[in-house]
Length: 434
Image (cartoon, rainbow, N blue to C red):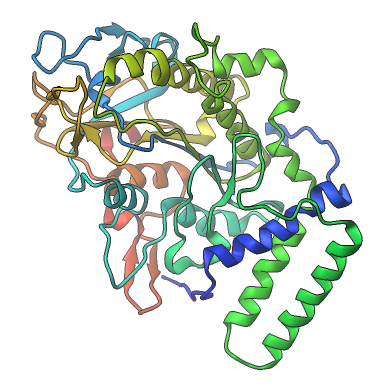
């Protein structure tokens, strides 16, 4: 059993340290160019990339189509290299589905955006007496702390709002960057080197005085996190955030050709974020989350999917999967695709789909898991599970934990002394673990 002591520091306070430290990049020019590669990684160094579809994606139009049903919508299913069919607007992903699987029997309890996000990230429903850590923070604690060669954060979130590390403490909070690798909330890039050094010296004195006042453990934890924030900015491993070092041909594989009229949006930011994720896990980061929003499709769902969401999604998933495979990294990298819930099988009056948590899908693959299969089954109209087995977020993350080599009997302790089972005691999905 692991005893966790909270450091009592707010995420905003931690980000201020990161912002101050970020100024050392342009001001002091510490970072030199390096090219990380898989050969530099230690043997059996596992990682996970979470593709988070903020807003709740209509999985019935992506992974579990219902042709001929009143709920089926406008899209048709196509064959893949696996033993399942997916949307016709995912043709490139269809060619790599022998490496990926779909859990079609998710039946969760939360159809509110905030509660659903919390549940899917932590495996626990929100509770006013405890803040549970996101699974990325759990991986940071379990794997990142054991990677002495890793100088950058063990949990990186690209393009999203981040998740709480809960009782694990701020040293396991996500390091927030945008799709260009810029640190979120960084507002100190205009400091001169002299002014920056004076500010750091003043802050150091304040930290020392606070610790000497013997006000408990939080002072030292505060200084430790601050020191990490400064030191990571001097690391050559920060080059992992520099996506533009990649060849244009490889970036194109992740982003795809822009649709007519620029409908890809943002130059394929989802694909660029996935390139960064690959670079980060190649450097040794054990957990990377990539946020791809815009899925709260209460209206005009089919046009939005066809012209905006699915072209980027298709290119990104296919590009990442194939690139990892070509580099010999796929068996060591777990890929998870999900949102906070699915969307209603019923199509509403605005040609959209509303929130739905009763029967929906999650995609998972890589990491040595079995690919090319569909786990579970929904009925002909997609509004119920007929396979006799339903799955919760704890089962997804237990499957990922086993693939990552994290013992399933791991128990953490909240600051109130409550034991918390890994993945809320979820069970690995037998069809995927062999």
